[in-house]
Structure formats: structure tokens, C-alpha cells
Length: 353
Image (cartoon, rainbow, N blue to C red; front, top):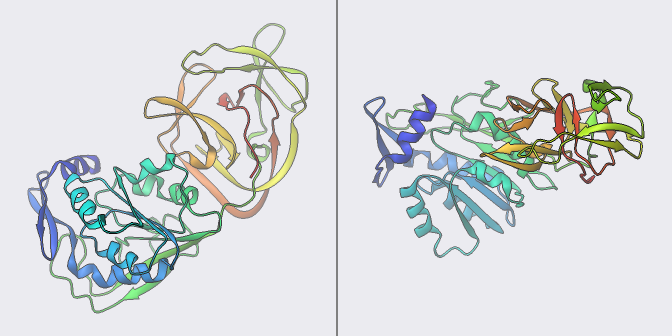
């Protein structure tokens, strides 16, 4: 139903009033609010706790511009606002016309994964957003500044304990706003509200590599009978199967040289419940929006597809980042060829950070 609602919303003719934006939902045959003026104390406080002067800020969803005005009052160095509804985009551009530090992005916030900009503060207040609880955590951990930053979002639960609302982050803090007295509406009718805030540390120094603790690093190689087997441990001068281009999937035999290096690190991404466990800087070949592209593991999202040795695709259904102090043993390949780990094609190269 979520996708249906979203498509209907994006196609809807919105009604703009002084104190609210509404639309008619054909699936429910009722009128629903996109944003309302009573939210102003919430948005003002959100900007106060999340944004400092000189920050580079990303705001997802413009709505009535209430949060945008609050952010501007904090004097950010840059203020990027991404909006997807065509009518609100018009309003956003009008609002931004005399604000040189505002950058308008049309489309979905997920589209920003592919640019290099990092942010000191990320504020999320979107509407009928099907991507939110699938990819928002990975998105923020990818887009936050290397020095760290703050993330805040709309608390649909109204409370402080719902793990789904907290994106399963630990150490989320809450600031209470009281005395709201909202008029009757379809989305929030309490007199108090708890604003969530997550402080994210900057990107830690990581190596690129495959985690041996979870995978045992079974690298597909080619023996004298041209059959594939798993090879553990991995040594130099072994022949391995490689594939340079999934769009032209010819398996080729290459020699693995020099010997792979075993190291230790913290902070790994577990893909599809131990299908792969990799460091954030590990390059991966993935299919996104119908095209094969190279992305680091910390840029992957649920829905991306991996290439398998039998010329099939594996959809990524879960990505879990271990931000604890657990130390993992990894194996780092210095090779000029793509290679297969646990039957999944891994991109050659990659730089430590």
C-alpha cells in the first residue's frame, strides 16, 4: 500500500492554505495533511538541537518551509534541500531565490547517494516515504561529515522506545516539546512530542577487505580440470576465476599474485545475513537502476543487486553495520582482477581511508 500511496501523492494536486498543505487520497477517499503550521515549535527546536552556525545541512522534504526557515536562522554554510513533489518544488524554488546558501535538489533523497557531498547535519521530514526505514540509516552513515554530525527526523511514534522509529540506533537522545495542542488531523494528535537526535561519529579509518571471521573467504578458483572449488586458505600464485564485466559475463582464469594480506580492523558491513561481510571501503560491483556500477560497501543500499558466479543476480535484502569495538580479521587482495568471494563478484582495487 505504501508505494500506491506514494505514487498517488506525487500525482496529486495539493491544496495550499495558510496553516496547512493537504491532498485527497483516492485509496482512502479522504483528505490528508502533508504539513501543518502547529508543527512550528517542533521544527524550531529540531533546528536548534541539530544545526550549528557554519554547518553544511541536508534537509529532506520542504513541505511548508517551516523547518527550512528554522535552519536558515542558524546561519548554515550551506543548506541543501531535496524535495520530490512537483508543486512543492515550485514553492521551494521561490523561497530559495534570495538565499545564496540554499541548494535545491529535485527528486528523492536517495538520489543523493551518488554525489560526494557530506553533511554536518541531516534532517528528515518526508511524506509517504517508502525508502525511509529501508535505507535511511545506511544513507546517513554514508553522507555524514568525516568529522561526525547530527541526524534528526520526524518521530511518527511520539514516544522514545520504539526501536523501528530509532532505526535500531543505540544512544538516540530525545528533546520534549510540550503544549502543542494540534488541531485534529490524520497523523499526530498529542500535546507533547519527542524530537529524536543521533550523534554520528565521522568515518573511521578503515581498510578495504573481506572479513574472514564470518566468511572464511572462499575464493572461487580454477583447477586443472576447469571446475570451480573453494580455496581456503588463500595463497599467492593460485589461479582464480574472474569476470571483468557482468554485462558480458565471460569467466576468465587469472593468477592471484601477490599473496593476499591478512589484517585487523573495526566497523564492517554484513550483507544478507553473512552472505558477505566487508569493510566500508571495499569496492563492490552492483546493479542499481538497471546498470552495473562500482560502489564502496558503505554506499550499498537494500535493493542493489550482486553478480553471482552462475550468471545470476542476488538482491541485497539486508545490510547491517557493526559500529561496536569488535575487531575483525580481514583479508586484503592486491590484484588487478575482479574475483569471487562466496560466489559473489568483488571489484578489484580500492583504497584505504
